[in-house]
Length: 274
Ligand SMILES: Nc1ncnc2c1ncn2[C@@H]1O[C@H](COP(=O)(O)OP(=O)(O)OP(=O)(O)O)[C@@H](O)[C@H]1O
Image (cartoon, rainbow, N blue to C red; front, side, top):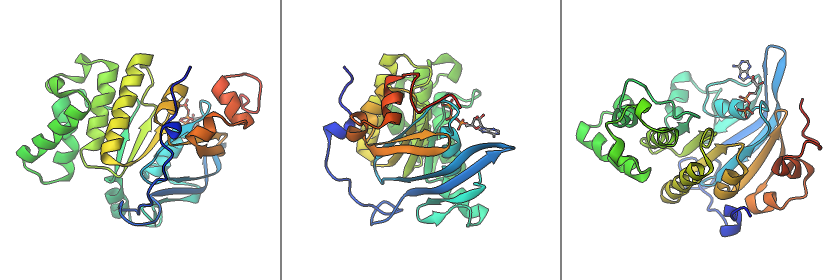
């Protein structure tokens, strides 16, 4: 039996919050996104609005455009057409300097944690604060140690990335993604390469931090257990479009043929190889 989805655990309405987390409005909306690489069309009219302060999980077969979507959201890829609105602003209609400012309001956890191999865990987590703020080392230490404690790594501060496990790398990457208090956190397959127990422990950390910080989280994963455990909302992407979107409890009991096939891993159904 799979554990309950978050949607089943909590059905209360999510509060409406604004771009800066305090009024009404949207945090991130992708509209009619099209993107090709050469002649290969990856995004084919994807539209998705991310609910503020919720965890939205993006599911979908390999190569269907999930990571490309995250890169558009954080402004690393420019759409061929369509818009990406973040905190009420179309990120490709604003000056590059402003876009760079907006990026600081994102935390991104890459698949392998993307730690700098030449720095220990502490310096990796301190890096964004040293780069983007003029905080003193004492102030930085307080934040870094608090975040490392949250992810259970306070004893690993002096370790180099090659001295810690894959799960620890991801938790260190998560701590680093959090130090600037991001309003949106993007997770690109946080569970890749982890065994089921480590995956579950990492998901517990994600949920705990989300309960404390109340950010808008977007989690790309292939792992159905992760999706069931952390999601408030689920979007299923195929061929560069959203083919299903709904609250997690509805998604996991849905009769939608795309959802049923993805959840069951059946080779027969609308999700073909193309
Ligand atoms: N910069 C790029 N140049 C050319 N092709 C790219 C580029 N980035 C992504 N692609 C292609 O776009 C498609 C979608 O890639 P993407 O990484 O978003 O897939 P995904 O859904 O995240 O897959 P997976 O679940 O396997 O990680 C792939 O075919 C990929 O090869």
